[in-house]
Amino acid sequence: MDEARDRETRMYRRELEALRAENLMLRELFLASSRARQQASALRNQLDEIRGSRAWKLVVKARRAVRFAGRIASRVRRRRESLNLGDVTARPAPAGEGTPSRGPCDVWIRPHGEGSPFRAGRSYEPKVSVIVPNYNHARYLEERLRSIFGQSYLPYEILFLDDASSDASVEVARRLGEESPVPFRLVVNETNSGSTFRQWLRGMDLAAGDLVWIAESDDSCQPGLLERLVGEFRDPGVMLAYCQSSMIGPDGQRYAEDYLFATEDLAPTRWRSHYVAPGAEEVEVALSQRNTIPNASAVVFRRPAVLEEREDLERLRLGGDWLFYAMRIRRGKIAFVPEPLNAHRHHDRTVRHAFERAVLLFEEQLAVKARIFESFPVSASAISGSVARSLVEYIDRLGEMVPRPAMTEHPGLAAAIGRLRAAFGERIDAVRDMRVLLVVSGLADEPSTRAMIDLANGLAGRFAVFVANALPGVLDPRTVARIDGRIVWIEGTPGIQPWTWDGDPRVDHSAVEAMSPRRTEVLRELAAFHRMDVVHSSGAWADRLAAAAALPASIRRFTDALGIASDPRDVAPLIAAYEAAVPGSRASARPPHRPETFAPLVVAGEGRR
Image (cartoon, rainbow, N blue to C red; front, side, top):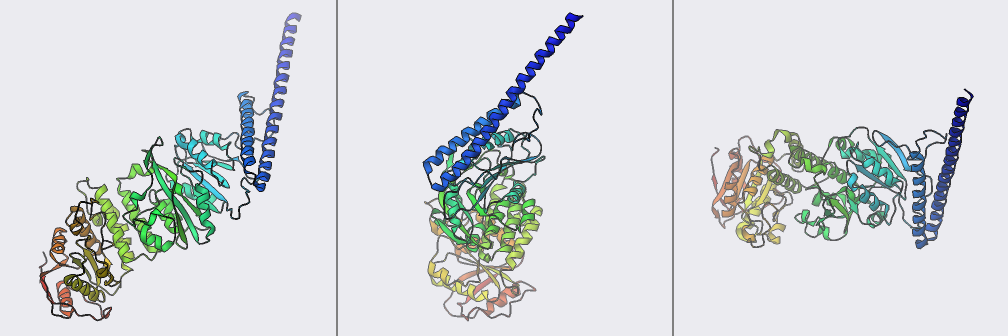
């Protein structure tokens, strides 16, 4: 009995000695961890002083020392966790420790308050908040986050927003956050938000910087991106600045050096050099037609105090970025940097890929255009050209659908089409209750063309007048200059558009695709969108284009059967013929823009079918 008691006593003593040894080791590890944190904090303070003295070589060495101290602290922490001793000590957990890999959380991996990381004596140094919205992009996070850490102009903070990823994104972000040279916040959603733009809104609500950079989690960038774009905000009127982007594949393969291929048809030289432009000009030329900013990762903007478009962004799934860019420059300017400092990644898991053939895409595109037209003084010709571009995309993307309804008759697009029509109606005189389309056979400086332009100018004072150029390759600047500013180019411009020419230099521009099926369908849809009353064509090419378009029977059609004579005659007989052709219509009592006389026209009216 005594022997058993002795064995039990010896066993308890051995366990006690083991616990004492383990406790001693824990105390040593805890002290080592505290010293490492103190050393890291001291080095960061030294780094601030070094930056103030502009000793750049020492800055590099100090950064390496900070990262080394951080790695030591991380190793000590992982060693303590491996002992599985639970809450042995009563100290609070350091920032980032205990962050769950799944489920909601909001924690600073690297908190504020340890000294500014970028006091470099710059005369202009705004704070930049970086928002990194992520969903299942663990594969790309190492490259993405390190491209942010390596910026020559360090941001003020990084906000990593994970939208309930099912891969290792949170673990990767947590590990890399410990190496961040600036404050790093990890925010994880419990459930997926269903929209990247809701994550944008949440990030902007959390951001504390003067400027915001939304760095998409699967993209990458050059070290000088922030420094180059931040410099554009020295101009207090600049609300948004962006750079050119290159296109890369899933494994970093280079697909394209830039996105000029997506913008050259709008303005061939605009995106080849640096520019700063008023927001209204940028919308008229570019953003009214399509989203000419292909990637959010290339954009830095002033943090908005109020978001007028918040409700739209919460609802949109595909077109929110386009609307967001336009609204940012509504009361300011935009700056463009032509160097491709951003790398936009294309892969099967991009958000747009899953919806690229869905009607939702067109519904949102048209809704965004309507909101832009409601918010900016976009010209009537720009609106009509923008509708034409949407028609072309609708035809190209849904061309294989059988049956495919006309875009203006698609029930899912009716609301957006109605808004577009209302926005266009505000650009033309409300008293003009008849809409006339004049189709000309080129715009050469010759008598027959000048007579048609004079006719259009005279009618512009009485009707809403549209002009289509059947041969967009035939374009004389002197003829174009004579056209009244109230006239609408139904295709946005009298010149070549993507649907009027396939880009083949061997094609004679004097007859560029005048009868192509795509162009005739676009013209037919535009006539339906604008609810034309009369179509008047002059010349062989114009007559052929008007006939090939197979316009609805409700549109009254006129042709110049015998051409244009030389004797002057007032336009009044033609106006009377138009009014007689469209029962219930009337010309405005408003006088013409300027008094004109016109060559007589032999008008052949075709009966309604």
